[in-house]
Image 1 (cartoon, rainbow, N blue to C red):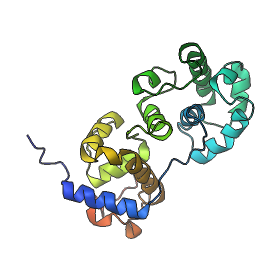
Image 2: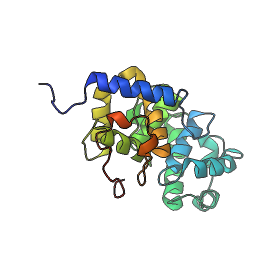
Image 3: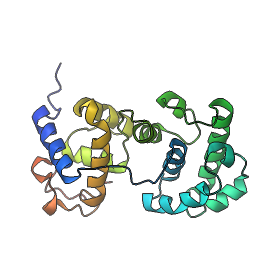
Length: 220
C-alpha cells in the first residue's frame, strides 16, 4: 500500500538536485586522517560543535594517535585533555573503554560494520553511521539535530525519533545519494534552516518547504 503522505519522487529529486547545486562538495567538518581519529572526533562531537572538537583532537592525536596508545592513559589524564568538551567525564570513560576493546578484540582497528561499532561504549546509531559513511564509504544516513529538523520541515518524515527518521530517509533518498545528502542536509541546517530564526527569505528550498511561513522559534 502506498503511503499517501509520503513526498513525491519528483519533489524529492528536485530538492536533492537543488541541494547538490548549493553544496557541490559536501564533507564532514570533523578533521581526521584515520577511522580511529574519526571515531574519537565523532564521540566527542555529542553536544559539542565540530569547531570545538577540531581544537581538541590535535592535542590527543599528537601523542596518542591510535587506540593502543590512548588505552594507556588514565581516566584523569584523558579528562584533562578534553576538559573543554561537553560531558567530558563520560566521554573520557567511553573513549578509554572503546580503545581497550579495539585493542583486545579488533587488533587496534576500527570495525567496519554497524553492529560491531554500536557495541562500543559511547557509539550509538548516529556515530556508527558517521564512521561508516566517512571512513569506510558505506552508504549511511546519520540523523543529527540538523538532519532531523530540515527533513521534518520538508515533510520527508514525521517520525518522533532519529531512528524512525533515518528509516524514512532511507526510503525517500536513493541509496547512492545517502552519504552526500546527509552532509548537504547538515550544512543546510547549520547555515540556512536553523532552529531559531531560519533564513527562509534566502532559502533555496523555500518553494518545497512544507512549513514555510510558520514560526520556527520554538522548534529544535
